[in-house]
Image (cartoon, rainbow, N blue to C red; front, side, top):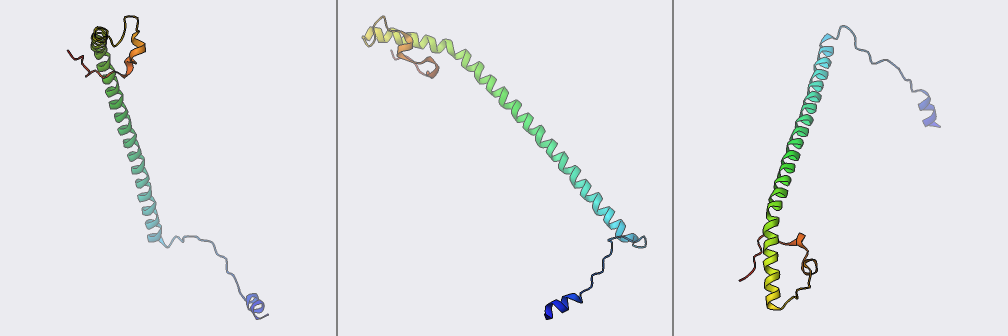
Length: 120
């Protein structure tokens, strides 16, 4: 009962959060604060744009490196085929495989390392 009666005596005074014209320094401080926040926001946008540019540059470098690797591998294919042909002849002479054996039965050419050489 005491709580109810004391709560009944509470008065609320509602007032609007209005800046008076006489508070010129406060308004200038708020404007300055908003301007600095806006500059930070613009700086953040510039950072995002710079990061996007760096991402594009890295993607271009990766694409260039991949195309160089593909070209290098394409140039290695004739050497791989020659080494494989020599190996097949060598294996036939040793009797490891017979003349009717197909290359596809021996090895998957996509997995051949260009550094492999036929031993003489």
